[in-house]
Image (cartoon, rainbow, N blue to C red; front, side, top):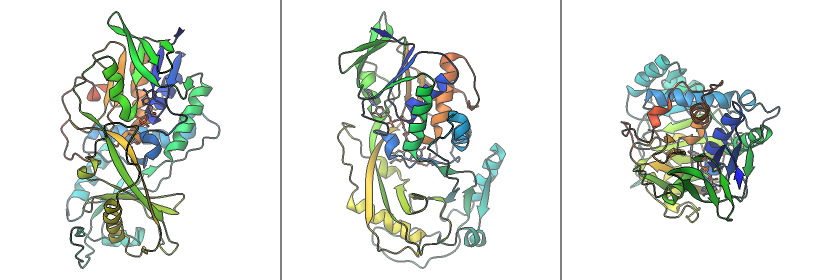
Length: 412
Ligand SMILES: Cc1cc2nc3c(=O)[nH]c(=O)nc-3n(C[C@H](O)[C@H](O)[C@H](O)COP(=O)(O)OP(=O)(O)OC[C@H]3O[C@@H](n4cnc5c(N)ncnc54)[C@H](O)[C@@H]3O)c2cc1C
């Protein structure tokens, strides 16, 4: 039987971030096992990969900052001479609708934490983002009744937010990890975690092969519960694989001006450009759009619902009034794992000695991945490294009480 120091199950952005963060500070023998034929087969491949700093919890703001800092310095972080991914620094605009005080309060809080933000009133919006409608009225998507738009919005702009192509970033981490000696295998589904003497002794693959290792990290994304079930661990955390819909369409040339990543909190959508500005991608920030739990993550509806497309595009047109209705609408669905208890991940040791968790990212995992990788790698090896987060792993420990949050949606 092969002997390794650590087996990581899953080669998504989380599994490969952990692998790379371990490799860049240790000489441990690391194997990453991925059931898919390549990268991007799980949540990561469908991710909108928005890197925003603002969270309800100050520690989450710091963790997001540290993850985003790695993406902003990607070549240095990955130590690749020519990484494929790049940080698109579009900025993130938060539009709180008719709440006239939110932007100023959050501006104050973000600046105290050290995150650069600005408050944009109607003049600032017109100068910076002329294509965007600054109306504070939420369109009535039930009846379709029209309203006279106002220009009263008072919005928060995160200067250093952006997005990254999630598959390219994962590919870079794969290349960096392999160059540092990490063994990454595809078409290598893990059937179960093996135990011996009450602790982890390795994994058994679906092929029948076995690998021995004293430490196994569960980074299996929406499939994570299968590994816990294989050792009959009742984790007590409600981690649901949930179907998430995204629609996109071409951006017509007449829609001019910079369009930042936008969270339309009143309307309940977010949008950003992709393909170097040639397309517009739209998703939801509503809890009601995170309700469709799938029983088998290998089998779910990957096409978007017509109703979802119509409602979200109607809301997009409210924000971008000069956007024509002419182009083709397309969509896709992905899965992410929602931690219903508090929308935050579970990280670190579980009650099974040698089995570690990195699950339940609830729609936040992409931006956090480099920092989460650093957190776990520092805890496993005892070695610090550059890009390590300031926030300790205890906040997300298996035996914590659920974190108190204001909103149970992607905007937590
Ligand atoms: C539509 C959508 C939009 C999103 N938008 C954002 C966003 O804007 N910003 C943000 O920060 N986050 C966002 N997220 C969330 C983010 O993408 C996820 O939190 C993150 O990708 C999770 O990564 P992961 O590695 O844990 O999971 P995954 O990418 O799912 O990786 C897990 C891997 O494990 C493999 N695996 C599973 N079981 C086994 C097994 N038994 N044996 C071997 N391999 C196994 C799977 O094949 C998979 O490749 C979004 C997600 C979705 C779906």
